[in-house]
Length: 292
Ligand code: ADP
Image (tube, rainbow, N blue to C red; front, top):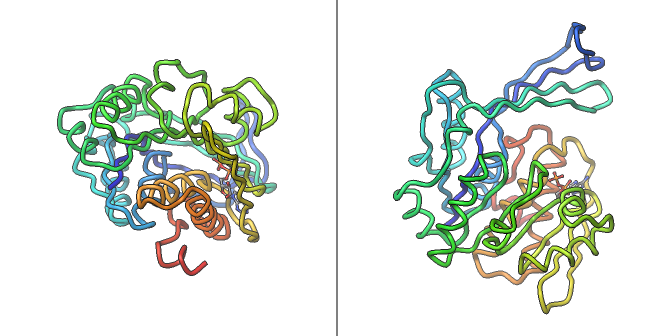
């Protein structure tokens, strides 16, 4: 059982020959609306990887709200603790140019209304094997979730994204930190990912750094570091690779698998999602991960 306390966003993606400058209008050649948000993506990844997943968060009272909720439910995520807040849902306005480079504006919308956890939320967290957290909700909510998990001895997994300085108070409540290499370097103030991971062990007992196509790296206090290569695939869409990896990793660890095994399984899940177009829609189901 996994609970995710996090964001839901509708990604509004415009495909353009090149991104507009301020004051300029360009004509795009394609447009898609894709359910996303780091919290929702991790929830979908974990549910498809085979866990019972509950999402805590909020969608807006606009047209996107029911669609975001349905996208979670379609992958088997329990949305009974997802509130509907008055006003717009979270949105990500994404411009992708013909080279695949992007520019993004995120408007938190309903996500900003989540500022803490209710007694019901806490009961759900208490009944979980792990609580997955990211940084697309107000920090007060992330902190309250981590505190609730600690009170009940539930393992906390934090993706420190979008990158920002973190209060020591929060890091002290985290069991597993899963930054990508840029977030690890930023948090530790050290460029080399291995050195950054070791530095982060001062605050957190276990750190997994994802290294894109170079794989991932695990360090823990008093244990030998483990490196796992990425699976070789033709990269079609790396959006949400990290969220797929983290969702699957949490499932494997929750099942009591050894770390190297859990990392290899998470890498397979992430590689499968990278090899297909679409963010959450490309996330693999358990049988596919096992077969790969
Ligand atoms: P994020 O998406 O958060 O920046 P990464 O880019 O580090 O995270 O990717 C997360 C994980 O996804 C990596 O550790 C790796 O296992 C897998 N992955 C990412 N890019 C590729 C790729 N091109 N080929 C295979 N696996 C990949």
